[in-house]
Length: 356
Ligand SMILES: Cc1ncc(COP(=O)(O)O)c(C=O)c1O
Image (tube, rainbow, N blue to C red; front, side, top):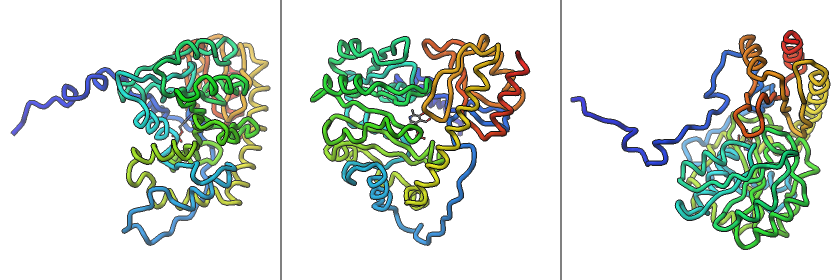
């Protein structure tokens, strides 16, 4: 018997009007050069051969937590592991924000999931535009502090590639003390580890840091990320996390990725990506269709073209998939290009040269 069923009409009001996050995979494309999701271009090789899949995994697998704490130079009690940094963004809102009362703050142009997660939970969003040089507008952050519970600050920032100044971060941490958590998203910090603020954790109980294995560790498909914070914050997050956030294969591979060999391999990847980033930036800088190549400390570069959509489409048609950032505030004609292999980068350069 057919029934008159309309799932959309049953959804929560804020979900009815929501536009889902257009991840690189959802946007599709028929490419053979994938430079739109800031992934590492070559698959790492891990072995999984475990006979305990009949059992539930540990909620917080000890080997993963210990290895990550050692890698980050902090205590295991300051580490929470979950299904990617995206889950951390969401867990923080679920645990700390009351819909209709509290707000989250972030500084566009920046990573899109802070907004999507806040919208999903019906939590107010305060968007404090970055200044023209993409530094924080510290005074506007201060003015908007009342009822803000979480301040997401992405450093290095996606998609602009810049680092947030330590002095500004300190100022925000101090003004938010006792009132809000300052969440520094360090998804790309392996490409510039000297800028990490992980060593501030002991000093600032309201500091939270997000990390991931998706970028320099080359494991975007694994879905594994970390929240670094004071043990008190971690305890609150453990109240709302799923009972088994990581599958057994994920935990086994993550522990390998974080052992001494795994970390050495990650560092050599970072060196290669950095070399390729410098070469790609230099090659693009001189081209007539390029207005500006922004400096980057990451595995991607932001480029402003004279006509961004023309470049995007021309490369798309050749199977080179980039990320169009032109809808973000201040980023008209800007495309984000993930650093691929040397061969992939040569294809990008040749395809753009052909448009000059
Ligand atoms: C700044 C930033 N934070 C978080 C994430 C999400 O990382 P994960 O793959 O661990 O969910 C990304 C992914 O692109 C990102 O760019």
